[in-house]
Length: 320
Length: 320
Image (cartoon, rainbow over the protein chains, first blue to last red):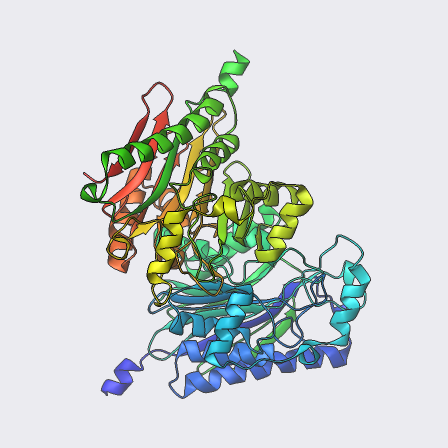
């Protein structure tokens, strides 16, 4: 009985694999199936942990590792190329129970940046480490590294070569008509566990052809990633510069905490009103401490999925 | 008359030069005078611009340049040493009228990191650049660089050698009994101009003996720096990890926007209640769109100053 009381919450998880101009007509049935399968695999990885009484933090990490290891998504293996032909990845994770957080910015070679973000949270005095220093820290902990061959994906390399000599940057992993087919390549997960704890995580390979050590919203606590047991857990995907300036993730939490909005109301206000007026394209996944889930986006599509205890798995790509 | 209408706001500016365990008994009269003089010079630099009808952005930048160029403060010249014996500086600036922002993280050699932050805002597609990439961007713009001799300050070097072989980091520029005399070395400015526009900026040399490319709250929009004409402009100084996790600057803006608190009420709630309960030591400077100023801190002291149109210059170091 005590166990039942402690474990009294119905668990739930939501994930995303990026948002943008994802159009049905530019997708083959085979590709569509592969994307949906990738989302489903990530949801299962997280749900398996939650259904066995595991923590939201573990579920978020497992779902993101599944997406990082899948070359279809722009994070970990499958990360896009920088202008210099390298891969600079960002990731963050936050524990809604303690408000502890960890973030890595501009790291190279680390197989699973989300593991590094969690290690920074749990094993350093800091919240955010960057560049070579973050890589050195990962090395001291013995985290798995991979060489350039692992991260090399032909399609990503072709994307770079298409725009390398221009000043253009690309927000994400695109298909053939990439200059016209804008997508924001990020993966993320949010979860509520049976103990009632929330967690959020986000991971990205950044923008194709990015330069100058650009850091987007993904590793910024409050912008791309935020979790707080009193309100919600959020992971964003979109045009990062706008998400930073609008402090998107924490704005949703504040609208709930200070204005009494529901999760869905707060998400609609920020994603469909404020960001649209601002010119910020993208979306996010959100879960509150009752297990309600919102998956708003103002772009044509967002790779997304969710699974609530006692409900079926849901995955989708396009808007309605 | 039209000019008077456009220029109808009474301008004001506030600055800080760091917070922490700043005790009267560990300060000589000569040092105290030098600190107050440094604060006064920075206030004058900003106030001169505002009183002539200049912008809040220009005033914030000028005040911070004055503090960066002063070796007493941990930003620009006078930045503390990292574990590797280098200087890695962070800075951010935000325009409350447009919500545009620029930030540089972990840059070396740039004479005035606040100028780089503004250049990133105005001349790049991005909000945040880091490390070697940020340095490269500064080079392409022809910003002023200085060699290690310029940044070398004996007192800072002694601080590093005191704790280099330990795992300790130091939040700031401390005096002789540095291990017991904790200060958070950051400088910042917030301003309201005659047009009614707000701006905020922050700059820091980070923590003595910091490692692994640690990024604190200073360059994080929403954490250490935030400005919005509808609410307030904020620049923080304190234990950065806590300020990131609490999204301090944007929290104050949200308490005003969504809960109707005054600037002073919002500052008290965040700095004196939430941060204290959280264990986050430090303070901040804040100004609202009516020119009200708040300078809250939960540490023993904070180097601070303010100047309102039609009022005298104010500078102070200790708490009451």
